Image (cartoon, rainbow, N blue to C red; front, side, top):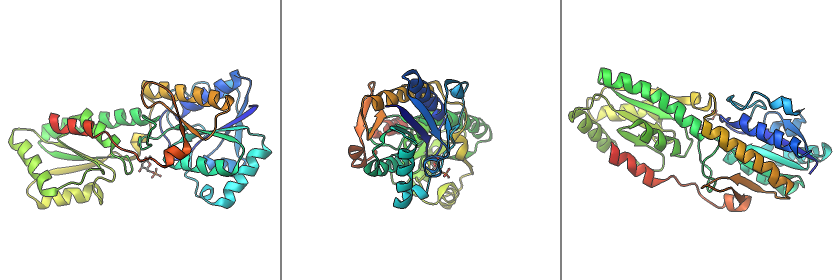
Length: 321
Ligand code: F6P
């Protein structure tokens, strides 16, 4: 292993910089030269990259975003451009590639590994935590904390003004962000894509809470939990009776900000292990920490698995509402 490349791909997540730092520093400490492709897979196609030295990653562990930038490369989805990427990796003498990204980026890495001799490992990073088998993903903990700090503020006004608020959180088709935001915020109702909702029952539940003396309720709506989003959920609830409702969409603020301690540590651990795994000859694996130990998950195993949210945790919301 003489030369490694790293890239960040897909939706950016806080902690990506901490992972880049760990990968760059570990490589250089092992006398492996390292470059960083810009804008995800686009950078391989365009041969757009930076050559790293140890100082290039100084003072970034605490910063949100990615110094390499990201993209959801539509070109890389086409065979023709993956072929260009493969040729460029060979031309640049890249022995190992570390892809920092989520589910879509892992699929990209899987496709590349079918045609390229460059060894490839994935470091899981997405605020959605929607990757089966891998456990927490870099950025998830920070995103939850960012959401909670916003929802806490909404709770202040909700209880003061006796108004019920719908707060939309991200997560694509996966309810993890919704569940943890629901638990952490003490939400009265949490709606996730994995559980079908019944509008009359939901409306009744909120009314019951208010009748019991609650001063305003918080409804967490995870992305994908109600097909047309918060505004149509509010209209549907209003049709069931006189609820005073407001809607806040937290949106991309959940992707920004300084990574939490948990994410910095996770990113560092996974980044170091990614380089050592490449050096040890591994390829086509995701470096993950599902429990308290590091795991190597085959791409095939990953692709044949389904992501499941923890329904036990989801049930805690009901028990503590
Ligand atoms: O995957 C991260 C994520 O923020 C999702 O939660 C969301 O559905 C999506 O990306 C938004 O993507 P974009 O920034 O491309 O609009």
